[in-house]
Length: 168
Image (tube, rainbow, N blue to C red; front, side):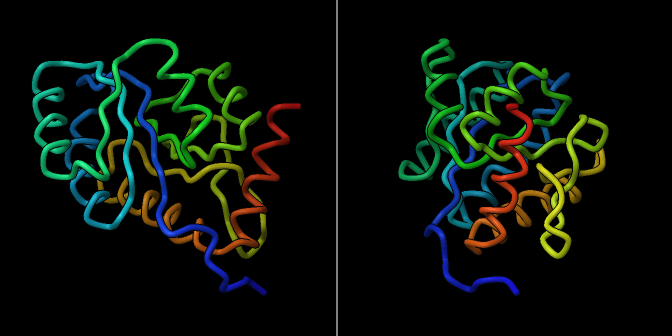
């Protein structure tokens, strides 16, 4: 049975990949405002094409409490990988980053086929929230599932336990 005790009041998501067309920045840009409206805090490394950077600065002005742009330097990437609850990838992350996140029990949102298993709260299996590549609504669904699961202590402990196994 799943606990109804909230773990936290809001989810904190990080974006560490460059916001470029290759990395499907369009998904992120479309989703950022919805994330902020849902009460999700977002921290983004300021790396990407000029259109993405312009949109990010607009969002940081509109949502100063929730949307944070960090200079794209190694210490800020490390900060994100140690302080957020979830890191969002729109393409397959490198395994070194996944292992680093696993050490800190940070949850991933990744496309299917990234080498991580979709979390299922009923079976207590999985170590990420996955979505079908090139599916914006699947992407949004994964974000919502992560946000909802983070509110249930038992579910969140299970996914973090499963993630920690990746660091071994």
